[in-house]
Length: 424
Image (cartoon, rainbow, N blue to C red; front, top):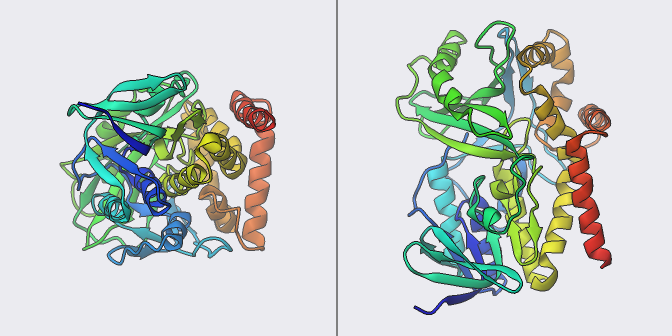
């Protein structure tokens, strides 16, 4: 069978891949949008679409009327004290998020890409195909072979594209794992729980219970595992005890959900070269997940659009332009927060102390507005005021503390490589 030729091959039809394919198809490119699963399909996620993602949807004219509008968030500390984090409207994003099951949200985006002209194909990217310029495509497990001028990896944290293009340093990656389930109980406000399974020893991540649609709630537990992928079982094992904790605080009333879904997260972009040659990585494949609170959909939509636009502006230099965008957009935040995440893992007493301090009487309420802006990576575009001032101070402290660490050096090398490519 002769290989099929496209301008762009997008591997993965999640939010990042579908947005990339949508923008490319609208721009006149011939796009193959490949996924190993038949849609609709589910994904482990908290189902919250953050303010920056909402803005991307609006920019692209994508309407999701079934989604539920979500505003403020409540953080519950280890002692049960609660702090309400306000959701502000920024200059470049709205003052709300959306809640919508990934089963429906991902299908909506994929359908929009197909309606724009992308060709959807079902198959697992199996054998890599290369030419003198590097990775050119894949033979799918169904027998179809696809080659393209540009390959976009949108195939998640364990990306086959990233591995085939040798864009990942496994020893440097920061992994996380999350497990979630649904309960038939209404929840009005998203809650994040800084949990202590054992008093004084914080869980190396956090738990959540988020509003859903049709009277359901999404709850789950996520943890960091550093550069190994051996700790995933703990999240599933601890979930029933965490649900007991939710019941004690009156957030749910029923038992832990019997059916759960888990998934890997690649955090903070560190350890992954997001673009080289004709290959670009977007969303989770690029490690574009907030290392403090695990958000990934906003970054997925933003990076998918940026990669597509870089291709439309000229495929020869697309990887350089895209990498430059990522460095400018995400380096200021990730270079300050990724080291914080890495430093706290393996220090349960420190995790506990920080959680108790942030939710202490007086301190929590004072810091809450700035905490909300900083934690959710909303400083760029935040309106002037006390919240922005506190968030900016937190960012400066984080960057200063991480100035000599390995994570900062990794970002410096990525920035230097981008500058050298530009000058060359």
